[in-house]
Length: 222
Image (tube, rainbow, N blue to C red; front, side, top):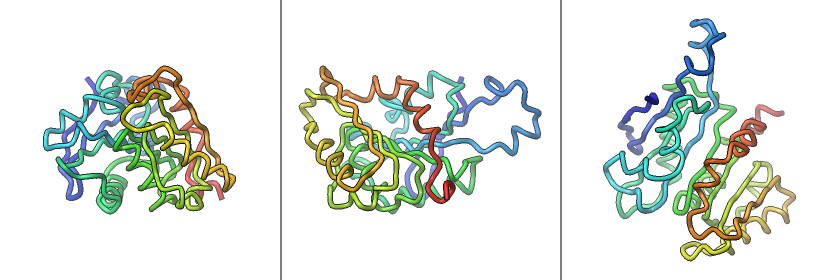
């Protein structure tokens, strides 16, 4: 079983997944494991998973994947947005500060991703605090193209389905075009046959996690 816990935070309630190091670090001594810092993903769910039951967060996306993969090689933080609300950059920032202070998180390898409402939240949080993240992966969301200059130094890989009937493909296209205008490091994957669910194949693709691990936050690269 994965080491997944229900955590109550002053900002959002969230699920915490910590990799089972015994499954991937058999050559490590115990003292080396204790001081190891893990790459970490902040995952923002979509609108249907809002509420007060943290188990609902496991319906889709990364929170579901780590439930099934105890050797997943990242710490994963999956907050839950209350019913009727949208993601708050301020509350997410408090959550990240708390998590970095409490868990073996490498602050230079924190990645941000989300789907649908969480895709919008990913764009907004990254634009508000681009210095916090090493790379981001918004899925079937959208953002404000006017903030593209703030994101020009942050690696972005965004995903969308051509046949999405909930969030139009144009929402991602607008952000990608704005980023390219500013010379940003941006990748754009469009699934020709996908409707709104462009996250299942994205989060099941090991190339996404390899791509994340190519990057550390900008301060660490300087």
